[in-house]
Length: 263
Ligand SMILES: Nc1ncnc2c1ncn2[C@@H]1O[C@H](COP(=O)(O)OP(=O)(O)OP(=O)(O)O)[C@@H](O)[C@H]1O
Ligand SMILES: [Mg+2]
Image 1 (cartoon, helix red, strand yellow):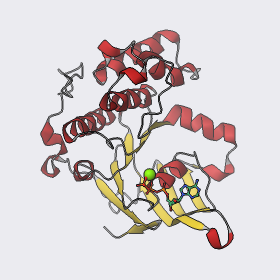
Image 2 (cartoon, protein in one colour; image 1 turned 45 degrees about the vertical axis):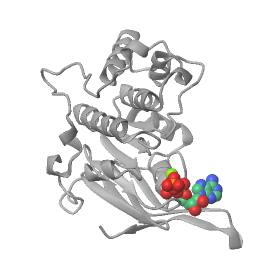
Image 3 (cartoon, rainbow, N blue to C red; image 1 turned 30 degrees about the horizontal axis):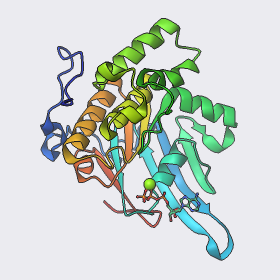
């Protein structure tokens, strides 16, 4: 059974232990206030997103302002329907805003073409979805390789190395030929994480990455995500209802009815 400790470069990068998810083990990181002077990787400014129109309008995001710095691990919490997934989609350029701005470094997304936003997503953003969003007819290895095939900056040798490394990182090397329906829920989550990290993204946007996992497997996925993102220097934003995940985040952002609650 996978124990969450299969990262291959143990000499330079110790395998995480359960204490990594305990609050006392969280390394001190700068808070938003402390890093205000630094240019954020992603910044949302007074973002509004509405669905529908007229009396049936639903304001999913109602003036969200948030800055994400490189290397930060942010948990996005709040009741069902509070806007977590919508915010992730807006931050990652998968969804548009009705008002406000979303900046990726020095570019405001609404000023960019679809192709330019796709290019940012391909090179800079890794998505991890609740059910993995793996392609059912492809093997684990092929799923991880798929987004890299669109990267002209990654040659075949490098691509093969990254796929192999990603599968070892998440402990799925032995199951690399399996299709998603031949994996457990936790294994699918790990494959999804491997696929996201294969691109060495600047930020990982994860929508309930531990939902439907038992506590032990969820904790292992969290440790792995945190450790690998630290290794690759990726910021992480996780929408979650999982107390284990919020307790190990650098910052917890609480949403309610599309608004940010004071922390
Ligand atoms: N495509 C859509 N069309 C209409 N309303 C939508 C759509 N997507 C989301 N909503 C509404 O927007 C609000 C925020 O939804 P969202 O999915 O962001 O919530 P969430 O916090 O991720 O919830 P959960 O914890 O259940 O995943 C909800 O009221 C939801 O019904
Ligand atoms: Mg959601």
